[in-house]
Length: 387
Length: 252
Image (cartoon, rainbow over all chains, first blue to last red; front, side, top):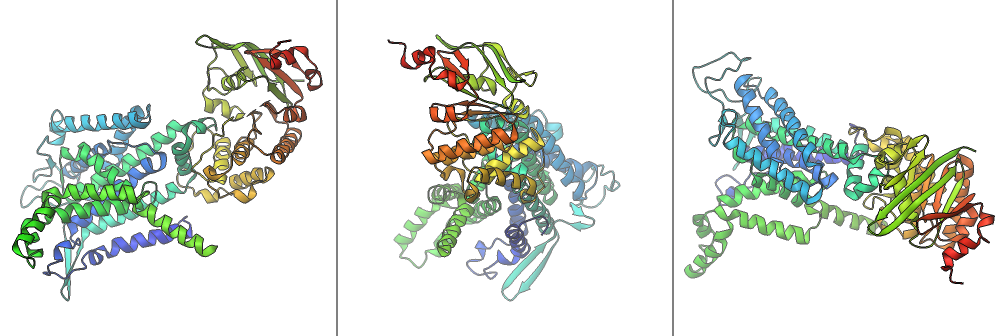
């Protein structure tokens, strides 16, 4: 089916089901219940799941297959974001040109950076990419202010030209849309105590994630993908086999850069604002964590990893002391205060601490990430059954 | 008889050690040429200069009318020279069949091909070629094994399959039977003989096992202290005084 093996096709269907039903699956707790804050089924967060999923899928094509660890992929996300906002400002408020152009701009940008960085491998490659990304960040927040809006960021305005739409300087700033459907439009469906929100922008992201995921499976299962795995396994041997590894790694670098640009384009299509902090090294590090946590080199891992990290970022950071006191109110006063004091550093602004702990545990106990470990467990079970 | 490989005046110095000292060698087309010599004679160093791993200080290596010196490893391979390494150099994380399909694809598609959308399992011709070679080497039951989990002997046979699947004009074998059992060694001799006869591949073989050398070689070069001291037919090598001196240190 679609040029995929049976297992891969089933996996694609599984992802299709997950993203299509996410507004329902991610809202398991009734509205207004004490657990409702663990619901993740609101458009803003769900869009981020998918956008960072795309970012991580692309990153995994480079890191998972070739083993080249880039610490500068946020630069491509940022470049894509700026390109996307400019399209929304200059051309049309329709998101399609923004998404396409942001992908292409990031592709060109990654071609230039990749061409230079791939002259080195290992830690030197990582440091080169990090240096380029930090330079891009510094340029975007200072010298390039006319293009990037500096530290305040770049956003759409009422008096933007929007050549294709015809200038419109009255009323509100138009919201990004797809042929009239605004990305921020949502349909709310109350079912019993539950409230499900189906958002236009979310389903646009979902559609694009499925395409991105499909392309990534095809790359993983192609001769090109096998060459990339061979680069990770034994780069030198490959050249004695008649293959020049450099163009292969560069192609992988550009493809993953384009995925990052696509993610950036989608980000500004959902919320037309691009800031330079999107290019900072913490953002580059985040996608590394997502990929490793989900499972490096697995097809599905990065999507899962992106979901996990974005979920904890949003949910843990929302828990405050009042909530904690509420949870432990059944305890005697002293104990209650003690419990709140213990948990306090791990939630709210300190959610990074929880993330760090989770990451440590995953690295130690789940080598291969969530998906890699699940795969190991399953293959062990099936092998036992076969014997 | 045409000459497949002509080595002229190759020198290589590592600091104070003259590893290769004016090496001259000519390998006839379609023949099996053995290079023997005591440890440290410079056999592997010489092979490294053929495949672009080492650049000699002077001299030339002419193959098919082209000087191989200064070319990159993948260019030399694409010119028709494949090498089997002394310590197995394989793609340890990939399966046996993938290990052999990679060189087969390189042979068909050249140094770079962006075939990122074609499913690998549709490459039936390439796969069949790989399976055939692995079958010749008695590894058909190990196609889907991860290469790293194999015995040393099997890794050597796998590497030989990787070289053979490219249908090279010149195959360089660096101790192909080291680490193999007697039975596997004999089997490998048969395979190499068969390939030499049927496909007419020129082979250069470095070997310590004299049983292998005298079973296979049409011509033998003896290398000692970086120089070719004798180049002759196998039957004339055994009794040669210079050769005995080289191996026994000349202390008599």
